[in-house]
Length: 205
Image (tube, rainbow, N blue to C red; front, side, top):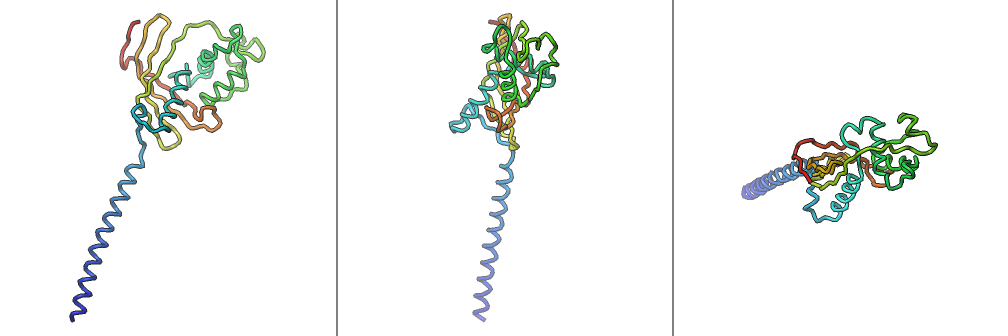
């Protein structure tokens, strides 16, 4: 009788211990599941080397990009705006298609076999594309946040200072999606970059 009582007590203790173990396991699984969503990295305040390197890479691409908003959806606009980034390698207002091809592919992941869609004025010189005289704005970005979308892409929000030809300066917000691209020299392509007009306001120089 005494042995049966002891056995019953031991069995009861085992059941209670197992119950607590099950509850703990369930909570641990819930925590892992909750944390598997997209994580927002405030890179500017993060001392992790990898995050700083990623911030520098994204900023480098953004500060050398002239393609924003609807320009991503029209080949002629994307190309004409990309030419602005290549002014330093232009020869008599012409840029070699080799430079243009490399820039557009590395920045935006697009491949063009030719640029006939720009018209004869831009392609009259074989192997080169003409840069038509035009006014343009300059963009300077500052990282606000970097969101890991857990699908090989990052959503980057920046404060962008736009210096216009008339001397005015706009302070706006910009949202850009970068997609991992192994063949790109940057390791990423810009999929789109949207500037929110009038979000912060204007400032006069």
